[in-house]
Length: 212
Image (cartoon, rainbow, N blue to C red; front, side, top):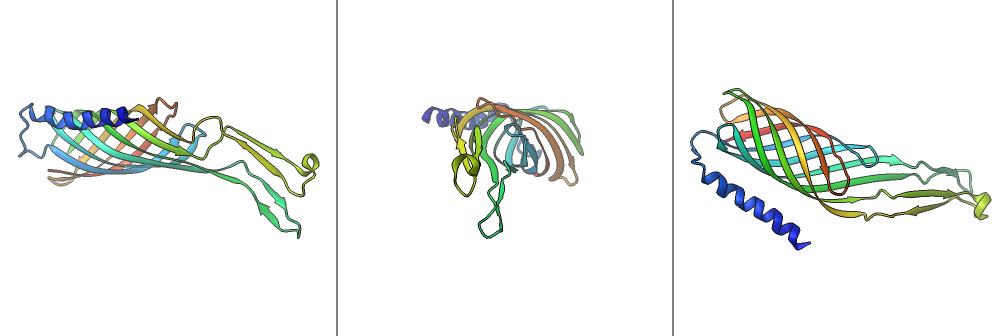
């Protein structure tokens, strides 16, 4: 596991050094810090949820930026509904509610096809390292009283894959922003993300940021 963190550390450390070697002019508001928040769909279980993140970027060539960030996702949904009548006639809800959540470090580049004083539109390619935890299981089986001779249903849940995973992946994003002051902007992004754990995570978000 240590090699994962060494890999991410090397990316984060090397990007600023690379930018400094490209004659960056720090007086032109070519740095930015932004927060994004929006909706996502986790491909495993087709579970809807939310995606959020903080990203910092810096221009190192005309229209080309490096970017690093810390992001997270939270996806949840009712799953495998089960209700039955209790001994006194009350309704007992034994339904499951699944949750998949994770956080990730992203580091990569962004290129703006359009870059003016007011508008920017571009593509970001961001390799990532992700930690994820999920309550999803692989097999759900319900054994009813007629089979078990018990006065209530029995649920058998089997997990074949780990509930906690680490994975490498990549995020591909189209991004637009409108600079409504010299140092603040608002925008939107659409993204598709996949990783070595076999998960896909398309998402879209609003972006609020500051140039400096």
